[in-house]
Image (cartoon, rainbow, N blue to C red; front, side, top):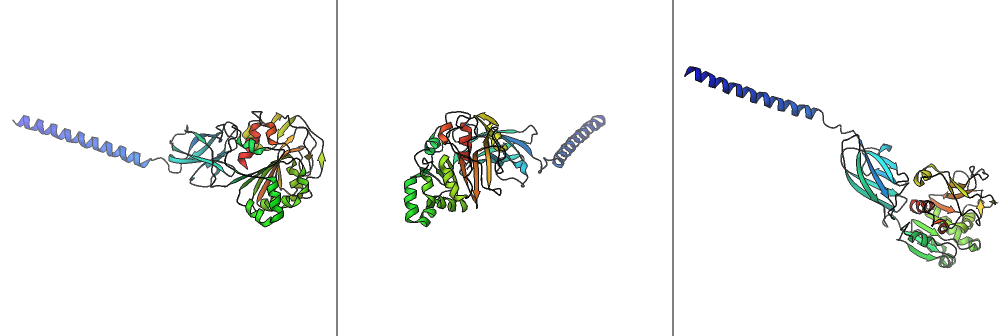
Length: 341
């Protein structure tokens, strides 16, 4: 009996010892895990593809973490010609926001893995948000920006409209009321009206006041006549220099488009100017390849120019925008500027 009792007691003691050892190991393991959590300041790559409203990959869009832990630029990027962008993010549930220009944006939810290999957030499609700003199109005779906007390759459908003749009548009747009317809109698209713009300096100057107070305008060809009044004495030195090739001079634009030089079919029939607004108030995005430069456009004869005054801008293209809409590569230029304004 004594032998049996001591053996049994020894077995119990041994079992207790093993149990305590196991519990100790578990506690130790938990303690070790708790001592080495994921560093809360650590960030990991997350990638998304941004599509434009038409469903095409959108280069030149800003992709960023909606609530970044700091202002570090690693939490934001510009998408390439494939619409791809990669930002850094803390691990866990996050929201990415994609945006281009004034009125197009979208968000996407993603659970960012604590993995240096990165997380694929999928695709996000930009949509027009009228709460960010309203758009006006001024119909005229020689350009059809409204048709360009409605094209399925653009899909920019939400805008109000008026005509250039209505604008001229309003300018004569009450210039202050017309300015207040324009100020309802964040963006104004101005069709070219075949060259009679030169006879309406009052309307041009109202456009200038609208831009100076933060408005954004866009138009092709004879819109330069508006610019002659707004940005006097610029846009007076014309040139006949041309080429059948276009060179993108802006790095962000060339990244968004996926090319720097491209054949250009619309190089004739349009007035060209080399005396742009001075003092850093203009940006040239593209020039005719191998054409003579000037002090205000040293890389060549300008084709796309952003002119700034006050807190706004007037973006001018020498061409009618519908002229290059049929070329699938050139349409990227039109689409970029229509969205990015």
